[in-house]
Image (cartoon, rainbow over all chains, first blue to last red):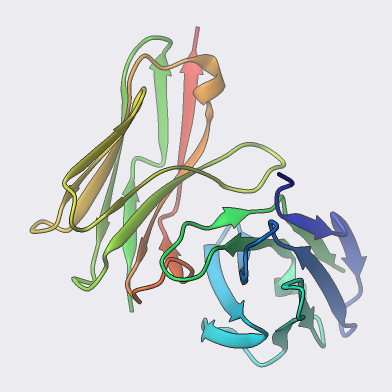
Length: 112
Length: 113
């Protein structure tokens, strides 16, 4: 069974631009969550989508948004990029209702 | 909100020895506690998890213990091997779902020959 797939693996953007990251969950998993990982703040929860609806949200500004499609694939978007948005963005999928998260290998975003 | 503290930040053990990593959490409503292993260039991989209705869980060389009264849980790795070298994260969920995890700051485990 294929794992969580995130594309692209690496991105370099300029401050002020926007970026879209993509995530394909494990087959059969309908919940997709996004996390940001930085050396300073560690792993932080961004949001979770289930059945195309945002079910939970972390404490990030509105520049961070996401969506989920009917096939459970998900995208997250960051607008007006700031230098501090440089991070590893991790997507995780799970079966609904109290099931463990399975992470992808992430997208490394660098903002210059 | 939930706060998870993890110690130590680095741990070096000799091959064959045991390793113990400890975490404490603040929210008494937390009921799900997974542990993840992250290798360089990869995402976190779930290695074991425990729910608040269980005090201990074991899977081969890995075990996790939970003390709800003291609000702490620990990861125990026995007979460590070089391939156990990685960063380990504990986490807690206080929302009733496993998706909104609060992570500890990580422990870099190095197993030396």
